[in-house]
Image 1 (tube, rainbow, N blue to C red):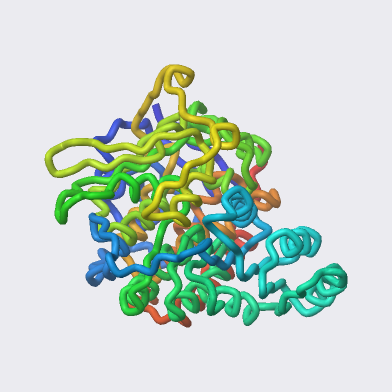
Image 2: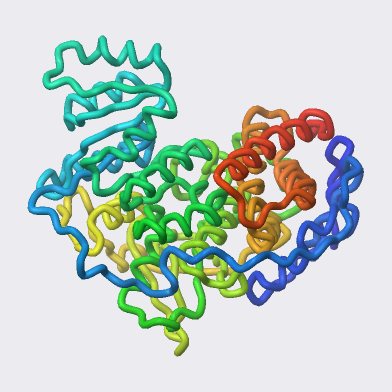
Length: 479
């Protein structure tokens, strides 16, 4: 049975879902154009006139991966007598606050020398009082003045900077050995580049660093002999699983996904989705953007691209698997068909801790870090993702294979489309259409080996184009 869903000037044709042996069969076309039925069963009618002819792309060789399927500990790495000094970029966000929780619990292992935040003066002031950094940065000059007043009674006083220059100074603070990059969006790219150029290892929690900046950032990291350590749960799981693998042993990466808010919804009901529905994650209470990304599975598509850049695995050998319990955080398969997995409660602190302590393992309290009890979990289940329900997978694999600036355009267009959806200016299904149309438009300007300036330019272009498509070409769904 096939279902046609009217959406303003558009109609979306949802064909029957077919099981697929991995995702290679789901993404056989690169932005084929919305006037034809795509392999994933979705066609869009009534789209603005754009160059929708199928144009195969041959991307240049990928940049050198951060960890080419194996992990080697540098015998000459610096070992600190006291706590390792860190800078934290995005200290008042989710990653930043959890990082500082870890520092507070393990003051003998870690200390903070610099903090950067956006606009939360109150929380940043509290962090300064508690962790006593030597340098802090906040969003703008007015906030810096407010922060200075809030710290009037603090001694010794930190140096206070603001704006992009302030963030960069935090990222390259001379005393820091590593930088935790928790700032959201492309705004985190320049500070990360500055940290790499200053020789700091990167505890990476900013997706855009690799998704948009991979072709530029990875060669730079190799040039400066900098380690990029993944701080998100899926890539940390892979990172932990490849410990000790010999060269050439890694065959396949399996990224697990919860399936998001619509994991158990029939495809036909997607036309009825409202914002409140998309924000009901079955497992976690998270921010709006990441929760919607989990519902669309764009978060996992972006992680596929990250996995390719981090570990050098071909896109044909990176798969997505729905795992509702979120206990297995990802898996790898070795050449002899063994499968290794990393398990744990869904808690972002563990991957953050490991990026900070690697290659060491730090003993943690069972009170604040509950031990995994598989008997309490009961059962672990898995299923293949539905390519019809999650067209984001096709788009992400296609963007990844195109390479260059296409992956950053995909991420930026999705971020803008999700913003429009949360603001109830477009429908849920329009998210996929806007992203595809933006990527399709970008094909003729694709840059395979972009500079940092080109990466930032096309990030901004994609947001502008996606917003213009959402405003002028799509009408909000009437549900």
